Image 1 (cartoon, rainbow, N blue to C red):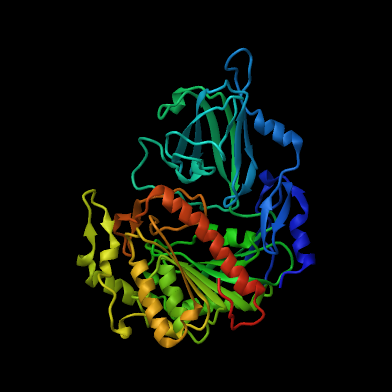
Image 2 (cartoon, rainbow, N blue to C red):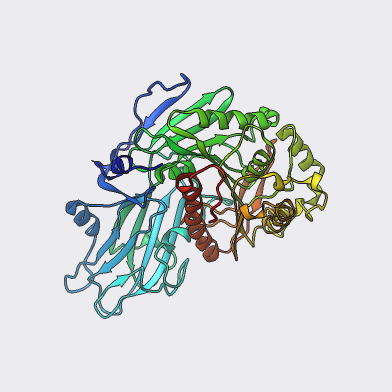
Length: 504
């Protein structure tokens, strides 16, 4: 359990977060693991409750530099001031944007601009009118147009989209969690919707969005055939552990695990599917059991307080493992946009073969984009054709969007509820369904993408439709993340025994 001595570690002042660096490798229980530690930044970590942390900024010089970053005169010598606070923070932390020293009732445009690690530019913008004091407060004032409308404090992030002329099918994903997502927020005169690069900004501020908090440790795992990354909160531990699984796009995706560690959980980002590697097909239940064992046996992990979290196909794996494995016995599990109608007993090869046999069920829309949910057709009534979730013995949280074009997650959740009712374990189930949300329910303020490039196992490249509408999808991501953290905290930190009776 969390204790005051451990939580005090989150209150230490540390050096500038701009100095985040990879440290020299250090030996761990396995010689194939290498630890990398992030240095801190010029702020104090404050813990929110017993587990999570947020960034505070205490240096006035940094604030003055931030507020006065690159401004120019509008009229009669007035200098517009653009404040974005905090200037450095976790990606799931809200920021406050305030503009001062404008003329009363002045029309202005706020634009956010980010260059991804793939060198593509993403932007969002909102149109505002200052009040009688010449001030705009984004958390209180409405955007009258742009990529978002209404009072949306974080609209400049979640409504980001590739700039005009960009490559098609893009999706914004962080690869290197040891570096920040740098966003330039600029103020322009008038209400403009294009040609920002040809305009001169009245003021510009730079904000850093981090997936990893100061002191969080990153550990490469290359052990017994398992490929992944472990993230540990600051301090000696031990901490509750989460095995984190992404979907069929494959690769090693670390950013959610890094964020979980920033909220007090030891987390393993597990790579189990790579479209460019044939050996992926040979992966079976034993691979996930070995990964779970590595996480459970680590000295910084509480072996009796573990969870599984999976999105899309990662949720399919989670349901299969929790229902049938004799080794994987978590205290709770979370499945996002997934289904129980894809059971596998031997290896991923079975799934790939099944997909080939049913490829004709997938449809293509007028833009030549693939809609995968038709692959499942209807939910089978035969329990042998789906995961018997009646065997699940731990609390299960299902997170779904009702505009999911990739998976019948809502229908699957309804069927799982019926199965669990008959089995007598439905009290363990909690379902969150979000109107207008699509398949890719990610951490808060991640830009919504309705369709993006996707590579099937074997190398076939398509544009996959994920579904969702931008504003309701953004709301779903923000709300669901809070619920997921609360669910994990309740069942991993606050419960007094493994057979958790409490509900979310």
